[in-house]
Amino acid sequence: MPRRIIVLTAVHGPSARYLPEAYESLRTQELPDGWEWHWLIQEDGFTGEVQPYVPHDRRVTFRQGRPGGPGVARTIALAQADGDYVKVLDADDQLTPGCLARDLAALEADPAIGWATSRVLDFLPDGSTVGFEGDPAGGPLERGEVLAYWKAHDFRAPVHPAALFVRRDLLLALGGWMALPASEDTGLLLALNAVSRGWFTAEPGLLYRKWPGQATGQAAHTDTAERDARMAVVEARATALAGLGWRYPAGTA
Image (cartoon, rainbow, N blue to C red; front, side):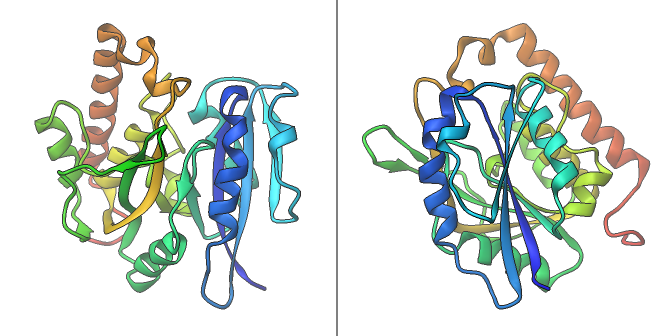
């Protein structure tokens, strides 16, 4: 029986048209013998706008649920996640060739690594890509490293949560994504880093699409009062987890 990587996508109507491109980037991934992927697409709501774009593939499961934002959609989809690992793929983004295999190799090589991310390139409307100059060197990310950088750089993490690859049991232990209107993925990233070491792959692993309809481009996302509240609870959660002394895997110093 093959072992599984669950690729998890939250989607709403405006971003559904990009699902075929996300699928193509997933379909062409090559995995080691004995491994397969299963794509869980979870609509944030009940509409007829998404299903027409869902690929017809036995490895793809489409479900709908009560609207609550991408964090809620991803977390409820965990009920169907029957693999050892979970890979995030937003509906409007694309994986780069070899990304899944690189993520998998990093975590299979070291049981003390709980999660991985990779370099992300902004994918602009004209088809060009732009990288982030502050990317860390490839290799392990020690506990607390991401939080320290985030606090020192105006709440900007050194690695991108949209590229997350994580052990399913660790993801469940932390309760999935935070119940926030935005930054729910950053909150999870900092929580993961509070309790476990991570891994960063310097080779690009994700094309992060920039387009007018994306949630992070809306005015509400940068509202000062809400942003301050989001950042405060994200930091408080990570700090509390670190202070409790719980570590993944259990028994590590």
